Length: 83
Image 1 (cartoon, one colour):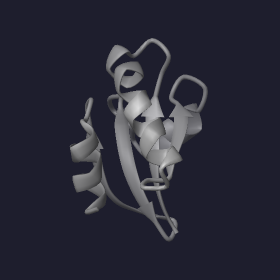
Image 2 (cartoon, rainbow, N blue to C red):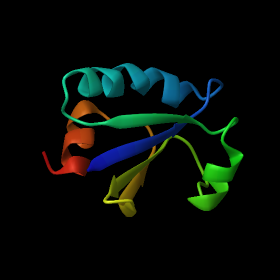
Image 3 (spheres, one colour):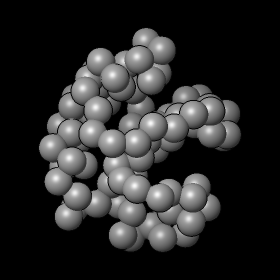
Image 4 (tube, helix red, strand yellow):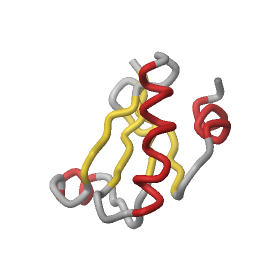
């Protein structure tokens, strides 16, 4: 199964600005985003060596396939997933 871990935080303006697009893609069944609050999930932040947010990790069969950082458009999310 393929998921995208979306590392975000309430104080992060770009994270909050782009979250509705990610939520829409999730509702449509296009991308399975798992939203992770970086402030509350310090162990995951350290495990995945997250240096900035928003950060998106494509996880396939339990392993990281690729990552991207920064506020992204719907098309950039789709390109990231190769949809």
